[in-house]
Length: 163
Figure (cartoon, rainbow, N blue to C red):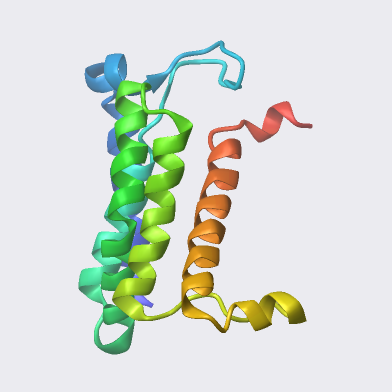
């Protein structure tokens, strides 16, 4: 239980530091109020992924055995997606296609490092095709890119504006 508390605390601490220091870095990292896809009422830091990544770092170096191996693999595979996402958060000039390709690259990298790809969807015809490694790797990359970008679409959306 103490490892979970450590990871949670590290993530929260970095998030609090990002929010409390936005006067220093906000000119570079804030998502200003207004805009087509923006639902913030006040300038808000776009770099919350740094807190999540730091939490993952703490979890990775706190874990032992198989859990440590899995987390190190996930962390390494996530680097392209994290880098391009952070670059977009800071510059606001990285297009959708490079970010999608970087995220898909993370999916391919995860397969390369772990030899794990999606092979079971409970859809018989698709599962048959997923038995072929090249197709399974491409499908895995597609799934990782799709899920990551679906989450990115709703990232930062204030729930209070939904209700």
